Image (cartoon, rainbow, N blue to C red; front, side, top):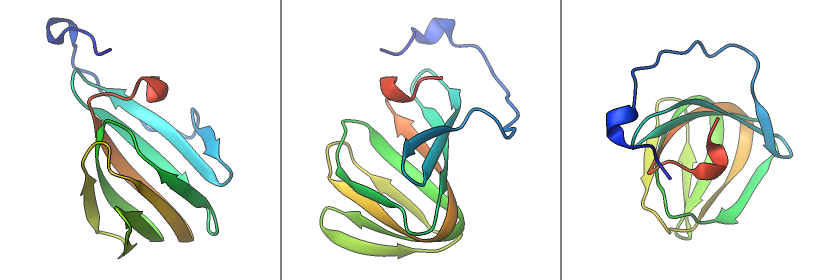
Length: 117
């Protein structure tokens, strides 16, 4: 559950090299900040890793900073390269195959309790 918006305080954080969690083999994530309605997460994705098809109630919007991956959204493959962006409505099945080592930044709304820092 998100905190009441009246208790949300401005926050600025440095990314740093620590704080990454191994989500799956070759998939590391770090929640950078939690807001009242949004959550910003960095993913470091190793070549050959796979994010299996899954779904969650949160909307997910992302941007590929480096690398190359193929994201499957609702059964359709989307090759992604640096500078590409995506949005996935809540409860839509999606997954990814990592073609090259990649870094992606994603925003989730509402917050994912399992990604809280």
